View 1 (cartoon, rainbow, N blue to C red):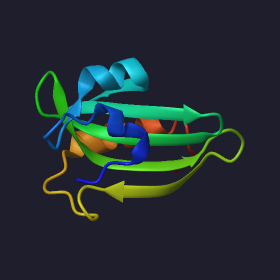
View 2 (cartoon, one colour):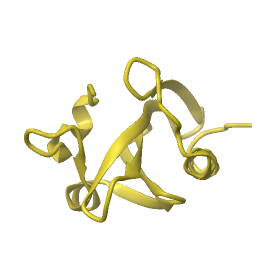
View 3 (cartoon, rainbow, N blue to C red):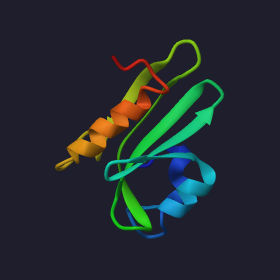
View 4 (cartoon, rainbow, N blue to C red):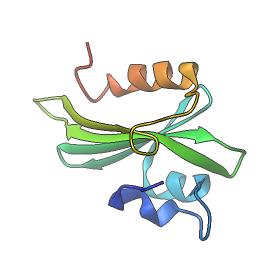
Length: 108
Protein backbone atom coordinates (compact mmCIF):
# COMPACT_ATOMS: atom_id res chain seq x y z
CA UNK A 1 0.00 0.00 0.00
CA UNK A 2 1.22 3.49 -0.76
CA UNK A 3 1.05 5.60 2.38
CA UNK A 4 0.74 9.40 2.39
CA UNK A 5 4.03 11.12 3.31
CA UNK A 6 2.82 12.43 6.66
CA UNK A 7 2.19 8.94 8.08
CA UNK A 8 5.23 7.04 6.78
CA UNK A 9 7.08 7.39 10.11
CA UNK A 10 4.69 4.76 11.51
CA UNK A 11 5.13 2.13 8.77
CA UNK A 12 6.70 -1.01 10.21
CA UNK A 13 9.97 -1.96 8.43
CA UNK A 14 9.45 -4.69 5.86
CA UNK A 15 5.70 -4.87 6.47
CA UNK A 16 2.55 -3.36 5.04
CA UNK A 17 1.28 -2.32 8.47
CA UNK A 18 1.36 0.67 10.79
CA UNK A 19 2.75 0.74 14.32
CA UNK A 20 -0.13 1.85 16.57
CA UNK A 21 2.16 3.19 19.33
CA UNK A 22 4.08 5.42 16.89
CA UNK A 23 0.75 6.82 15.69
CA UNK A 24 -0.35 7.52 19.29
CA UNK A 25 2.88 9.42 20.04
CA UNK A 26 2.97 11.54 16.87
CA UNK A 27 -0.66 12.27 15.99
CA UNK A 28 -4.11 12.96 17.40
CA UNK A 29 -5.90 9.61 17.79
CA UNK A 30 -9.61 8.83 18.11
CA UNK A 31 -10.93 5.37 18.95
CA UNK A 32 -13.38 3.91 16.43
CA UNK A 33 -15.33 0.67 16.22
CA UNK A 34 -12.60 -1.74 15.08
CA UNK A 35 -9.79 0.77 14.61
CA UNK A 36 -8.61 4.33 15.03
CA UNK A 37 -8.86 7.67 13.26
CA UNK A 38 -5.47 9.36 12.95
CA UNK A 39 -5.49 13.16 12.57
CA UNK A 40 -2.55 15.30 11.44
CA UNK A 41 -3.71 18.88 12.04
CA UNK A 42 -1.46 21.35 10.19
CA UNK A 43 -3.09 24.63 11.13
CA UNK A 44 -6.15 24.64 8.89
CA UNK A 45 -5.08 21.67 6.71
CA UNK A 46 -6.24 18.37 8.15
CA UNK A 47 -4.85 15.02 7.02
CA UNK A 48 -6.61 11.89 8.24
CA UNK A 49 -6.24 8.13 8.05
CA UNK A 50 -8.56 5.37 9.17
CA UNK A 51 -6.59 2.40 10.48
CA UNK A 52 -8.22 -0.99 11.00
CA UNK A 53 -6.74 -3.03 13.84
CA UNK A 54 -4.77 -6.09 12.84
CA UNK A 55 -3.91 -6.76 16.49
CA UNK A 56 -2.96 -4.68 19.54
CA UNK A 57 0.25 -3.30 18.05
CA UNK A 58 -0.34 -2.91 14.33
CA UNK A 59 -3.05 -1.97 11.89
CA UNK A 60 -3.80 -1.44 8.21
CA UNK A 61 -4.75 1.89 6.70
CA UNK A 62 -8.02 1.44 4.78
CA UNK A 63 -8.89 5.06 4.02
CA UNK A 64 -7.08 8.38 4.07
CA UNK A 65 -7.50 11.90 2.83
CA UNK A 66 -7.06 15.58 3.40
CA UNK A 67 -9.16 18.67 3.69
CA UNK A 68 -9.43 22.18 5.01
CA UNK A 69 -10.64 22.78 8.54
CA UNK A 70 -11.23 26.19 10.11
CA UNK A 71 -14.01 28.15 8.39
CA UNK A 72 -14.26 26.08 5.18
CA UNK A 73 -14.54 22.61 6.79
CA UNK A 74 -14.18 20.86 3.41
CA UNK A 75 -13.11 17.23 3.13
CA UNK A 76 -11.55 17.59 -0.32
CA UNK A 77 -9.74 14.34 -1.13
CA UNK A 78 -10.35 10.75 0.00
CA UNK A 79 -8.48 7.61 -1.00
CA UNK A 80 -9.63 4.09 -0.19
CA UNK A 81 -7.39 1.03 0.15
CA UNK A 82 -5.06 0.02 -2.64
CA UNK A 83 -5.86 1.97 -5.82
CA UNK A 84 -9.34 2.77 -4.54
CA UNK A 85 -10.28 -0.80 -3.69
CA UNK A 86 -10.92 -2.14 -0.19
CA UNK A 87 -11.75 -5.80 0.31
CA UNK A 88 -14.62 -6.04 2.80
CA UNK A 89 -14.21 -2.77 4.67
CA UNK A 90 -15.61 -3.00 8.18
CA UNK A 91 -18.94 -1.13 8.02
CA UNK A 92 -18.89 -0.17 11.70
CA UNK A 93 -15.39 1.25 11.27
CA UNK A 94 -16.47 3.30 8.23
CA UNK A 95 -19.59 4.68 9.95
CA UNK A 96 -17.77 5.59 13.16
CA UNK A 97 -15.01 7.29 11.10
CA UNK A 98 -17.56 9.42 9.21
CA UNK A 99 -19.22 10.40 12.48
CA UNK A 100 -15.88 11.48 13.99
CA UNK A 101 -14.76 13.32 10.85
CA UNK A 102 -17.86 15.50 11.23
CA UNK A 103 -15.95 17.18 14.09
CA UNK A 104 -13.51 18.47 11.46
CA UNK A 105 -15.47 18.71 8.20
CA UNK A 106 -19.03 19.39 7.02
CA UNK A 107 -19.98 15.87 5.93
CA UNK A 108 -23.77 16.19 5.63
